[in-house]
Amino acid sequence: MKSLNLFLYICLVRYKAINLILKKFKKFNISIILDMEDSAQDLFDTKNNANLKRISREGLNYLSYNNILEHNPTYVRINSQNTSFYEKDIETISEILKKKSSINGIFLPKVETYSQVKNCYDQILKKKINNFSIIPMIETQNGLKNINEILRADKDNKIIEYVHYGHYDFCLDSGFWPFPEPYHFEYWEIIDNISKNISKHGKKYIHTPFPLIETQNIYWSSINFMQNNLGISEINLSLVNIDSNYMKKPEKIKQTKFKNISSDNHYKLVFAEKIIKEYLNNKSKNKSFSLSRKRFIPPHLYLGAKNFLKKNK
Image (cartoon, rainbow, N blue to C red; front, side, top):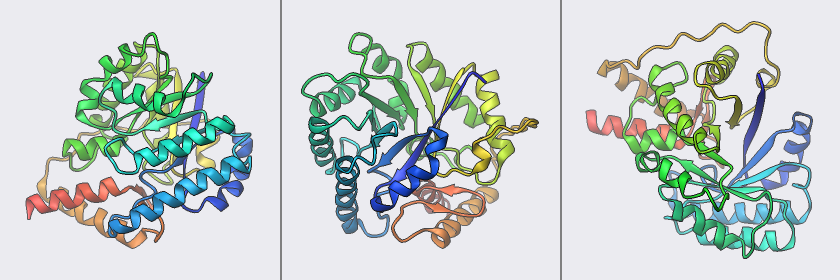
């Protein structure tokens, strides 16, 4: 394997604990994505969202001004431009960068046009800073449809280094149920389409977070598949949790056998009910996502299950 780079999502709501997290993973040379978006929201109390977003901005200021981010490649996922939180995120990051450049770039959600990328960059920076970039997140059907136009428009500006595929938002936007998993053909068809469009423009693809827990073989065989079958030589992975299985490649890997998503409606109903139950049973009070024994369950998966049941009951 030529190159394997990890990007770890970290929730900013409990920002005073992040220093310990960074020390824990320091030896692995992991880039971090401080999340002001999905992990700072409350599906069941929208009035609480403003408070969680405020805490996240406070956390980013705290980490920056106390030099906690100095030795880690650091990115920030902000809220999308169609939310009321975007402008405050931009203002916070712009002020931090005026005093110090401890942030390497911005993950910008739900990008569908190049003007979104350019406007974000121009709002944050009054003048160009070396090694600072905007990472557009392809999370909608329109974003995928316009991906070549977006990347072609950056040819002269060169403010895009990476493009990140957001699988859960994309599936929710597309109305899929169930969402394709890493052992489904449909999952890799989407990845192949996106990654090829990114690479032909000289940009780097960042893979969507790996959703399955304690599945070392699927994780490593997915990496092998990306390299050997999709031609992705530099593997950039985003993760929401890390254990030792993600750090050291085993000597023997059995390639996962892919299958098509079941078309059986009864299965889809049962699976939707299962996801909803697992999400509610395992959700932390201060986090929007849930970790069951087998999988990472983001709010998008919960909402996808709810939408499917609403249409089919």
